[in-house]
Image 1 (cartoon, one colour):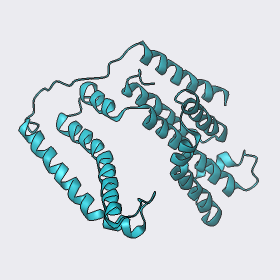
Image 2 (cartoon, rainbow, N blue to C red; image 1 turned 30 degrees about the horizontal axis):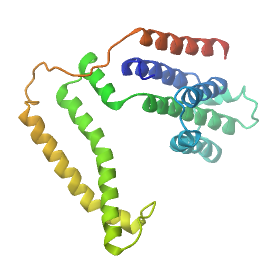
Image 3 (cartoon, rainbow, N blue to C red; image 1 turned 135 degrees about the horizontal axis):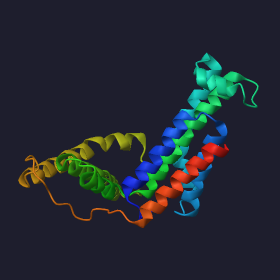
Image 4 (cartoon, rainbow, N blue to C red; image 1 turned 30 degrees about the vertical axis):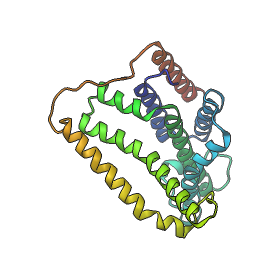
Length: 241
């Protein structure tokens, strides 16, 4: 997937998400989850534990649909109609499970896009092919670079404090330690944001003019193959399931 343009991957994932939002069929949703999970596990060699951890928020969100339908019976009319044909006897439970599968399916597709797409290449493709203004694109690139820098800064602060007290760095910070890291990390982030703003102003990002972009992802036959495979599997799943 690294040879595929990020915009092609985005189009494929968007098509599957739209289909999952429209088609409230448990078989189609389960097929979507299994298909994208298999691609990540087999082709990208993603760790199963990593994939499970990334899916926890979507699973919890889906579990909320189940509990809401069981406790308050706030299922949608279409979900209730679909649940009437399901094997589960309770319409509330069946509708909740269907909505939960939809949340997990959309989450799996989103995780697939996040794990197979380089954020920098995605933004460069948006600026070059989708005409995203540079004054919006480059701050987003800087923000993405800021996140790992903040994590490294937090680790350095924790190591310095551990060396000062003569102890070891805990694998996970305690609640008190996490709170104590807020102020220095905010100061670090503000300082980095100020430097980025000065650098962008010095390069004239306020002016509206055409700019050159390096390392722009192009389109090739890999995009045609990926798009054909993704859309063909979607159409086949809709027809068969």
